[in-house]
Image (cartoon, rainbow, N blue to C red; front, top):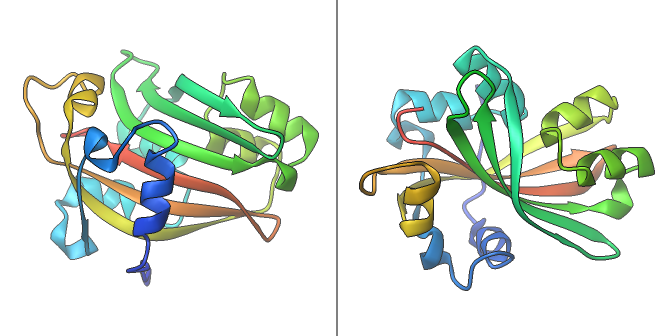
Length: 184
């Protein structure tokens, strides 16, 4: 695969995290890494240009549900802090922060997203929205107390994530921070 992540993605990371946390350090310590610096499973889950919903479901062999922890709505944007959980046992397999430019999505798609009942990737696929996922950066993360709690860890364990953009119908509509649970 020939993906070339940007090495200039820190502003996007900070902007996304600041939607829900006072500082980046409140979520964890982030270090940008290359794909060859990641263990096999996180690399498989993060180093691609597909939707995480599809990738995570394929990896775990079960469908996932979305759980919205908090959301912000403005006239032009919808942002949410989410978890993806396995339908089979409710285990958290991914944490994420998403910011969507609502003006780039149709009303039906926007309403489906804001209903907070279906993972974003599944909505875009089901509504046949032309999409292009672009990987920005890969991250090694030493989780802060919130991520430790979210992932149900006894102590902090290194985890990995990515920042990405989804272009919908040719427009940069969705900004993403996606972090997979350790030992996913």
